[in-house]
Length: 126
Length: 126
Image (cartoon, rainbow over all chains, first blue to last red; front, side):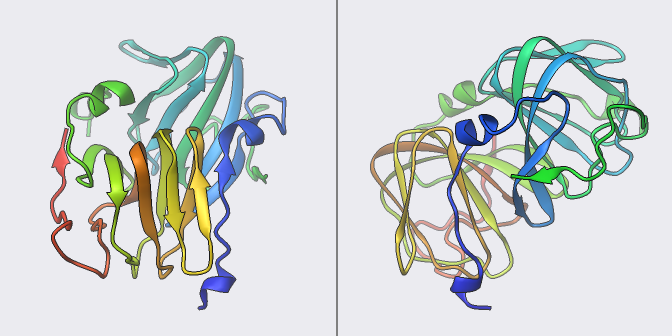
């Protein structure tokens, strides 16, 4: 494989975030080592769920994100992140709009084991 | 495995960066899905190298990072990232101090195929 077949493109997170406005619908902005980098805007309460096979990283770009766990809450401000290990039930809650970068394996479904109206099975690449 | 065996700990990137001062020596701050999140401070010119098996993501937290490729340069400011695919020769250059978050497979060696004085084979966990 030549270098030309692997175009190296810079990603500006703010520009990508400006390209969509809907909540709870992750966009894929990069792929590496079978992992995806996604951006998502959150507002309100998500559903309780877990991912059976995937650890999931939430890195906050803007706003304050609460990750509810069954025994406590994690509060994340910009520049902070958390890894939710596979199998751990969690619920993201955003009182005001929150922008988040996600690192997780390709194919991870946003609602995990709790499919419903908010499930996005094939996130858009932007 | 119970949830208690998987402690969920928030990571503040600025706090982690304040915990070390040396350049070109990545620290591991999180692990998920056999990938590592590392933080590193850069200043000056690194060595040309490539990673035979690993794609590598550079996300700039502070400063301006130039990633030299053989045919052009990528300039990254805070909030911007790039994925350098496996097999692509690159050289990070930081005219002034730069703080970077790396996302790459566990075991990725900073100097890739070009081992030398700057090689760190076992990054510290902080």
